[in-house]
Image 1 (cartoon, rainbow, N blue to C red):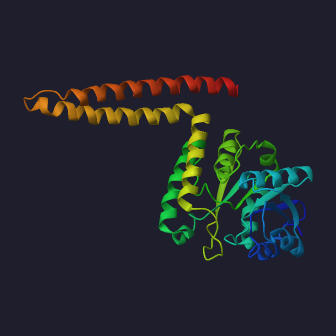
Image 2: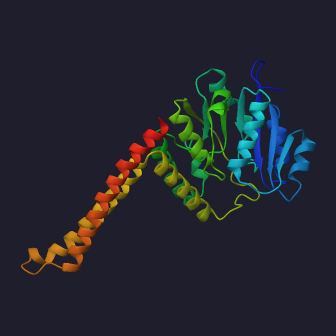
Image 3: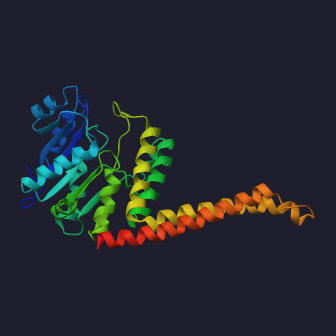
Length: 297
């Protein structure tokens, strides 16, 4: 069943060992479109249950990461002439009944990427505090990378138009695919909007990975994306940090001199070294920025 009479919708659900929740997620989602479950190397009954409930299942033989699972789903959508794709997590955190909210801006031609945001209706208050801090950092770095003001860059509940699918050239394997998607579509001038969604956190197996290592890993990938796509921004930030450290050492070195004593030589040398590092970082950023522009052109 499709969400309207003209648009052909595919609901892509990447899944890894989600036998406890995949059945209910598929059952609720299939009211709004065809359902494709991309089983990313599960060792439990995820694929079997998804098929029994009515989903098409594509399975990776090994766990290749969420980014690769989504790429498989997007390729299937393009090959089978779908007009829009909705991405939905398999763990039950997202409410499939909200799928029409994400599709509406695409159906009306108002957006190419619609992100379900936990921050637009205060649903983020249910997020554990330590995760809120991590999400804030990831949101800010994604905004820096993409130049698009997004409140919930890491939300996996999102919808894409066919134009967006045809424009994507994803390289991400893991969870930083969400940030890469935003940056890539923004760079190509496609319109990105957010709609409010609700999220549940009382779901089984809600943490498959250590949240700290997971967050650091995603952050490293996003920072790398900034360095590759916007090197002047990244190197300017690093340069300012180096200059700030140089300023601290300079103050430390000169403080006794202002009181009638001698300059601390070691701290003065450190200030000079960090000043040179800051200059070199800024020059490197300028150089890489020119090269990045040449490559893109």
